[in-house]
Length: 286
Image (cartoon, rainbow, N blue to C red; front, side):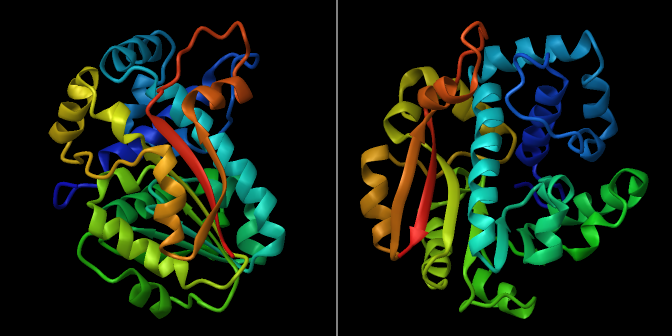
């Protein structure tokens, strides 16, 4: 991330959720009626009829399949979070960005210790936008415990403990759209913290497939993220995930690749393609 600026890709993910919410019902794979309220004025203008269709075509040319993958990822994580929630005591969103789970499922923050971890620049931006639109969010964010952390430079465990996180409590960690922008050392530091969580804890995260993203046709995508100041640093092949997570005491419950997500959620007549180089993973602390 560029200093002093909230994450560009975090707002991009919120914009995709808003786009998906505006899609025809028979094609819609995820609905987030709060996402639009968290967008900047410029992004909100792009959601207007006519304009948003041009934006979609432009994004598809530059980053083919990323819109469909991001929408499917949101649904996949949402389903597994809700399935895990009855058996955990805490939820920790790592790199929460402009996530709206606190508003879409307020019962989670009412019952569980609910943490949102993010870079301070992005976190401040989100809190300011929520404060300006209290008529949309009401008091739903008041139960969220914000934890400001720079994953690349600060100690995640220390900051979590300072805000009331309990390592002996079963926890569901949601780590969406973040790991790929960290270097491998930062990814491993984060997994060490997760690996110390109580048995029965869960990890829901996504990653980019190494062999796919290193192909020459992804060169343009790599350059775009570099230009945004959020370069791709971490990738991993699906067959390596089990061994990688196992080093931190985590077992793989489920791993789903992009094409399988399309089969799960998209109507057969939906013409959208999905990014083949993305995976979503459900890990568990055994």
